[in-house]
Image (cartoon, rainbow, N blue to C red; front, side):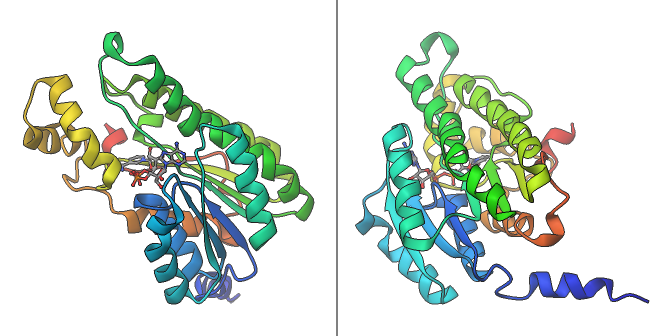
Length: 275
Ligand code: NAD
């Protein structure tokens, strides 16, 4: 009998990503921070990123560095600005080496009916949630192909697969990033580079907390009803997805044993899109 689980055990031993560099956009909080922590615990050097000033991210950066024992740095930058994206990639390469793992996770949300949806919010959501992932992917894909290994993970959403009212820009951007993921997967497949989209349902993070009052206003209901009937109403488990569950999927996708998973939009949503 072959030791089929030898590869499994080696893969998930602490440190299986030692020697890899990961860049996780939007990792100053929420899902991205948990993914960054998971990747660091698996041994990867990690560049954290967010829009916040370095002082605001320092507590989290230091905690992940101490817990994991790997190099963890932080850069801030507004991903709606292409110049900032180029600087983020360049500084990551200079500090930690070229990214073997790119997690396009930064995202923003705005909730309003289409007739009232501010043009500037549409432009911001399209830029941060979609165009930024194209620019970062464009910057790192060639190097990953040359080195024969790469993992690109795009945080999409259940809203990359189905729509909800009052989230036109977000739904459009998240459907767009699922498409970008598929195209990236096809271009990377022959070079050891995989690209996948993670599609969470509602996860309790600042992004979700902030949209509760706007959703209540747009739907003309109370904030408790938003949580119970709109957010958890969509999720058959009646529970929020956790950031740790998202992080575990991200780390798994970076393993060698996930090499055949590419171009997928992987739901982690308590059954939401199974309806
Ligand atoms: P969060 O608000 O906790 O984190 C958002 C991150 O994006 C932060 O690090 C922030 O600094 C960064 N960011 C915001 N604006 C930016 C900008 N202009 N430039 C650069 N970075 C910017 O949110 P979260 O809930 O952890 O969301 C992370 C990702 O997960 C997003 O793409 C979001 O759409 C997606 N998502 C979230 C949920 C959920 O329920 N929370 C569900 C599905 C998908």
